[in-house]
Image (tube, rainbow, N blue to C red; front, top):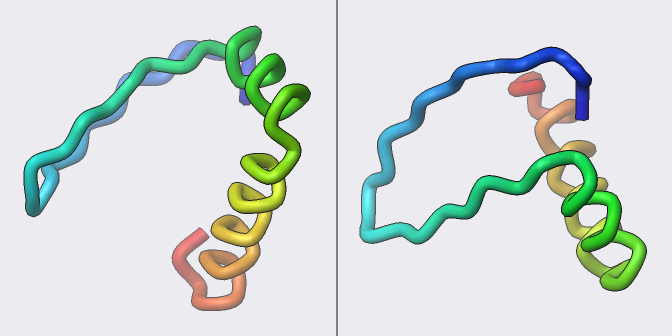
Length: 53
């Protein structure tokens, strides 16, 4: 959720739908869907523990 602009790329292994979510939309999503915030924190914690942060 940095203010700087980043350009990333990824390749999906299966059919995938993606959405661009800017900071304002992300903040609104986690405010209205607290479970989403918990799921994101769990995913980040798992990555940190496994060394893929």
